[in-house]
Image 1 (cartoon, rainbow, N blue to C red):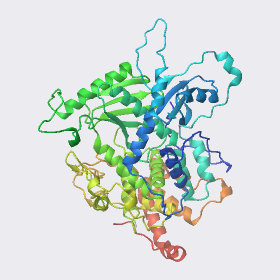
Image 2: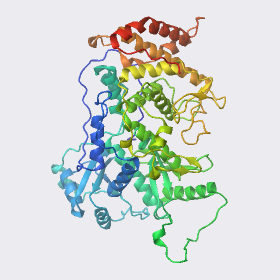
Image 3: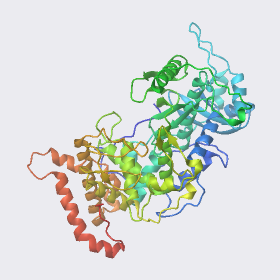
Image 4: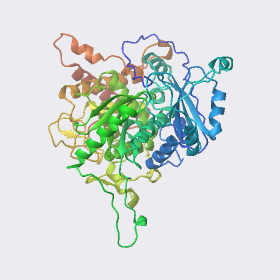
Length: 583
């Protein structure tokens, strides 16, 4: 599959040469002013911006980015190509139907090309000369889509004219390569930014996600004209990593939407519709039909499962051409609003995404998170914890959700199923933070803060940016930012929470020790983030049969001792007051 899971840094050799590691080349042609060019400019600035620097480039609203991406996907075709192809002749053939804006190649069960035309009419022109294949004894189900197959009329004549195809990288780096990159970094800040660059969704991968949604929309539109299939979650909130699943929802709100301009006089027209007992039954019926259609007629859709009795009914399938594991729901607008909120937080400060990616990678390396549902902490919960921590800094790095609500205007007002989801949509109206703390300090303080957090009595609330008394007895309580009566971490067990606390204390201790005696670049010893991703010392100690005080308590006492003895020295050398980890 193209979307390979992130390798974990376990049992890696400590003797790594600090050689220059080359980044994979990516091929992408795009016009200035397009969303592709905008995103590439943002990628260049992210990870390289100095702490506290202000990017004065106007930022687009989440809805603007979504609409541009969707329009871009509608002008794009996905073509399964022969393994050996002349790229120049291929593009010349396609350009007969109109100018090409951009294209890239990638591999997933074969060679594929995603080609974006400048006009939608070019796609129609190409479809009009495309035929249904002849399969011999088997029968083909005719379906006119934008997922096409290219065949060579005479492959022998093309052999001498082949050109090398540069494929876009669609997978995250191996554990060994990531370890090399981290060891070659100049500082802990550089390590965090390097990890972000290697794991974040590339421009091509993002385009492929929107294209996949657009292809599924073509299938759904046969039953529901004017519908839209929109991605949400990690694919759009700026915190997705290469290999993450593709969550999408079928948006039916635009069908038959009432507008005053369409009416006149004293008459009102309504569509004749079928009635069902509840919204849930309607959702189940709709997804049942769409799931059956994808299974029977959707090109490239395999392993279709209709999970209709879940709390949130969905259709799960694999899209073979893109390599994505997909979950399709319907009218999941609160989830899309949550995606917008995270997108805004990620765009407000260059340190946010780097810290979130590193904490998530750290959690995955120590099996705190898992792709299998269970009692583990989720990536969403970890992201909420990072945001909350950054709201608690002095001065705050991120604003509270309540503050974002005060900046909202009439255009931003949003009530979904009785829940107030209003917050400002214009990023340019939010003043940048005056906080200039380094990523190294923030990572260390994050582990200290939650290593000493009173989880037994306090809950985490990014709406107000402060601890509150827990309204229930769950070990970990993180309030859903919009459905405020829900706990997004209700699944987490006491043992998993304690494991998180133990590892947080250990990681803070490791970073404090390194601050006093950091290995030299020529020592070939793991340091900084690379050291945090190695197997846990606390876990190994807990396996011993010695009857001692728990490892996490010993580490906590050592950490407190280091902090108290070094507080005056830290003030003198850094000119910064030691920040308490207590609220």
